[in-house]
Length: 79
Ligand SMILES: [Zn+2]
Image 1 (cartoon, rainbow, N blue to C red):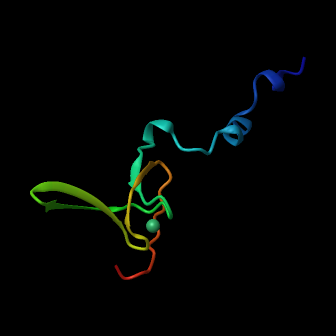
Image 2: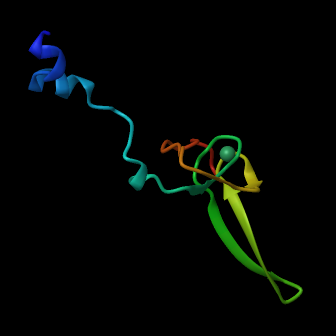
């Protein structure tokens, strides 16, 4: 049997290295469900009850979702 099939060269090993991110570094963030940008958390008191709202610069008040896919760019819309 051809030895190179059993022991691939270092160059082959390098080429086969997966390009996806290490799962241990993936941390879910609260993002806008429409555009996947991180939301800004706002806390306020309504009738003496603490209320937390989340704000997207493009979609305004949203109910955030947890996602490991986060857009880094900005909407370019004045909040
Ligand atoms: Zn949004």
